[in-house]
Amino acid sequence: MEFLAYHGCLESEKELGGDFVVDFKAWLDLDEASRSDRLDDTLDYSRVYSLIAGEMSQRSDLLEHVAGRICRALEAEFPDLPAFEVRVCKKNPPVGGSAFAACVTLKGGCRK
Image 1 (cartoon, rainbow, N blue to C red):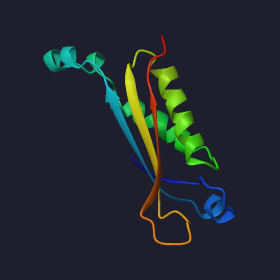
Image 2 (tube, rainbow, N blue to C red):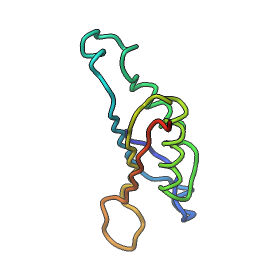
Image 3 (spheres, rainbow, N blue to C red):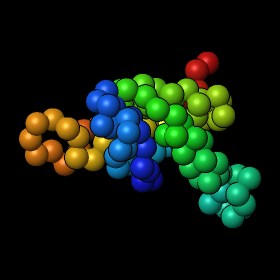
Image 4 (cartoon, helix red, strand yellow):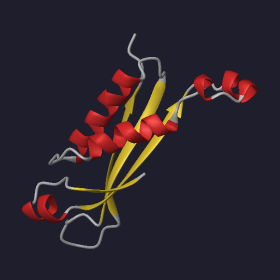
């Protein structure tokens, strides 16, 4: 998923924004969906996208904070999701040199 967002510690990042990529991976039992061909038997990716887009629209200084908010929101919305991973990347971060992206990856899942 790609977003224009306003995350960063520098004022220029907060004003001009930057390009971000969010990757979402989930580990879940898809046997029923593979047999039924019904959306109700799987994870609705449009709901996942909407949730992540909402979190990306809220400004944060740190990528860690953005990724953490996304993980907590996913756990609240999908409490039975057994395991997932969220990676948030800022393209062309202001590091004083050439860097394709800076990324943070967090893992989450149902807490029982």
